[in-house]
Image (cartoon, rainbow, N blue to C red; front, side):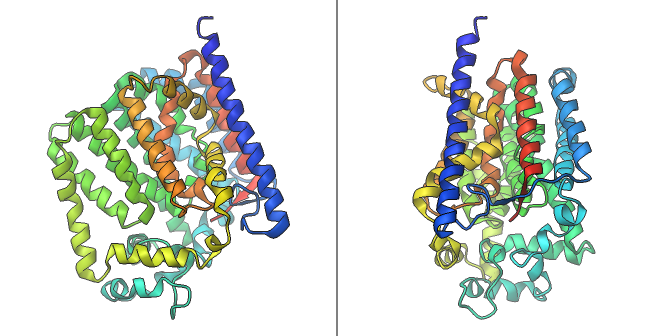
Length: 438
């Protein structure tokens, strides 16, 4: 009874988020029908209206029901060492089942083989050194043999990942899709580890079911951005362990964190903003002690790629020009600067919105969890204002959105089943009513 006013305010926040989504959908469809400048099928999302069911439907419903009914109680009972593994298994089942709602071919095996994707260029990489040396020269649309959109839009680490899979005998869309799903599912346990290190085991247990049943799983499956999310998540988790001294060898954890942060920067230019979340971890832990080790871990990537012939900053500047040669040149900033935020409601869900409302009330005396949430929000807002994220942010911002999901841990435990049901309902509705794409 005492929490009723807070719950009412949670509902007001949720209502405001829903209103933002409705406005973004209505205005977006109007703009798209009028002049087509949004370049998406179902604004603000990069998707098309296509109600459907698939082989993953029954599995997704089963996972949702099990997590809603038993997830919170199971998270309370499991040993601290077992919880991340359970979260990984649950997340893996959730991401796989949602991907298979679209069927094996369309949902997994063919997602990374379209004309925009990395696998289209894997066969062109016969000499990695030569590829690095010529990589930037092939970014612009008017360049000879210009790269497909997703290859051009990222540093070469993304393409080289799939080249490595191919040379290891795991070539083709099915292996690439499975790899991205497993990597994406690994993000949820990383968040559990980080929250436990920074905010304590109780916060980690309360957040765990929400990390499993994330609506973001709709886009985590068979998207290379799901892979990016997994890598960057463990960079943050290892930094949290090092900063709080929650491991026997903090310096080694910080070194490994730096290696993953360094690799993240060569997977996506925009993920240089993960540094903001990294700083939030250090602020929450009240230490900068791991920073030299983190930098030391990241430096080898800078040296290797630069000596190999690829200069990160030159690639980014060239990409900026390429970005505005394509759809971004006509997509209106005035819509996407707020429409992107509406898209995030689909990704993080209404429980996260309510949790962020509660976090905002604690902003004057922020806990470590609130500081972590603030870092994720700052990274996302910075990306939004940059003008380099017009549309598709439900996919592109997955590495940032992951760190907003633990906000649900701030909700009263007796309400968790209801909020989890809301998260699952949103994900299932989006996945079955829309056909998402990249």
